[in-house]
Image (cartoon, rainbow over all chains, first blue to last red; front, top):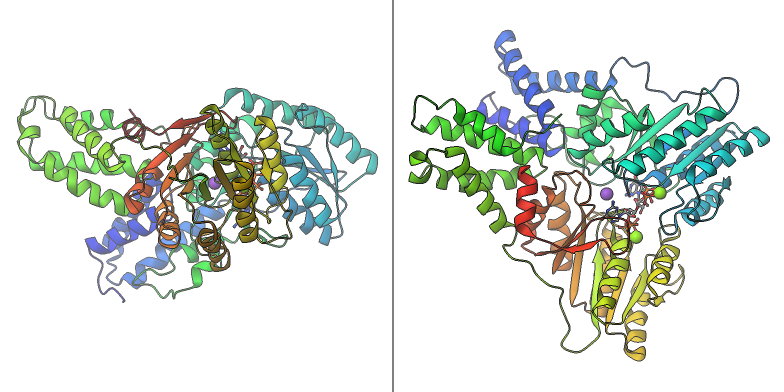
Length: 294
Length: 297
Ligand SMILES: Nc1nc2c(ncn2[C@@H]2O[C@H](COP(=O)(O)OP(=O)(O)OP(=O)(O)O)[C@@H](O)[C@H]2O)c(=O)[nH]1
Ligand SMILES: Nc1nc2c(ncn2[C@@H]2O[C@H](COP(=O)(O)OP(=O)(O)OP(=O)(O)O)[C@@H](O)[C@H]2O)c(=O)[nH]1
Ligand SMILES: [K+]
Ligand SMILES: [Mg+2]
Ligand SMILES: [Mg+2]
């Protein structure tokens, strides 16, 4: 059903769509206020005129300056990519997918099994290594992850690979010691290759709510996060919190995860993402089923 | 980004009262807006918030608040009590079959903490002199079986596995059979993470359910889950008839409003709180503590 006029109910519905998509609560309140002003100023009467304005604002926010969207590479040597994030968000799986992506581009890839803590974590990465056809540098379970990283960088240099992708154990951002361990991992990599890591990607579970903002803030402080990967968007969650993260912390989304298979990784597309936010909303042109794309 | 607890927020609302000395309807409305925001920031689902606010407002417009010298405190008290009530009031225990073994089936989204919980529950049951058998029913995730075997090894509990070529339904069935033969009084079945909209995998877990008729079906929910928690819980409940919920990763700094959403849509008790990566970090769930946490108190 298409709504006929812009009234309180309409703004409420917009607010609920945004909140329901986990867009940051503060961001939503600000956006809705801005829209109210816009309606007065421009004397907008049709809901169909307002929705594109909102979409545009969101896309603009997500795109930011735009110069940080692609993956940074090391022009003269090994590109090192470090993965960080809380438990169970999809770090290891995304590493498998990204390795596959680089492999397909004809690059030489090496993986570092930096999660020496979780049961079966090393074996999980090894299975991914086999699937994709890339080698994994590892030590025993329980080893110092910084030592694994040191080994991995040496091995990457020895083999002169194009890309080294480093897995780390999941950790909650409020665990001081574990966050310090991450800072150490970061330092070790940097000591061996001064320009590295070239990307530090924070993986966020698409179903996560407001806490993701805190994750981005604290991981950013401890490991110099350069970008985000938003996973599990093959479900019905929208992952809207990245809008607040982009807005408040300036971190771009680089990739989205859309499943558990090797090729379920896509480059982030702001337009498509915002489009999916409004899928199913009354008063817009969206039709059912579109929210499955992203 | 810094979160203001509900106490501060409400005190700000009613701080303006000083000198006027009377609570008006507008004051209550403004207070309710603050309660709403606090709950949304805690990730309580917006529909659940709506119902909840309506309920609280009804009580808050009564005499209690108007006559009070500390209206903020009275409202917090009302909110707190209603929240605790909604979350189940008292603590509930794990089911027990009249004739052993008690079969417990884990269910939930990817990465929620099912496998870890399977290990933790086994450890807890061992400490109560039970003999749990762990069943490796996730044949999809790379090294999922290995993960469960490592956990079982850590606590000296047997793990039943048939590799990743046998169907999970068959694995579960044979696992329960082995428990009967070898005298295990609890069977904990780990399953693969699945999206509630994945028809094939939801059918699979329904088939496991039909095959082993579990005494307890636990939905494992990551406490950091946002608005999506209601969809997940509702759908799993409709398809599987859940009997309980376990909230994981509560050792984080999330407010955990998902707890309220899940409870509100399923009506199932939240039975445990998982509070760490180590195998002994499992606690009974306390509705009153969770209420305070959601409110930032
Ligand atoms: N549906 C879906 N599942 C995913 C996606 N990405 C990862 N997963 C699943 O999420 C679960 C956790 O993924 P992992 O890669 O092990 O996550 P992690 O962050 O490495 O976890 P820890 O190392 O334990 O902290 C696995 O079951 C994955 O298959 C995705 O994009 N969509
Ligand atoms: N901090 C913390 N981490 C936890 C807790 N419970 C589980 N984890 C971690 O969360 C991650 C995922 O846990 P798993 O037990 O593998 O989750 P799962 O639901 O079995 O995942 P899939 O099988 O991939 O669907 C691992 O890194 C666990 O160590 C908890 O209560 N607190
Ligand atoms: K999760
Ligand atoms: Mg991992
Ligand atoms: Mg598992």
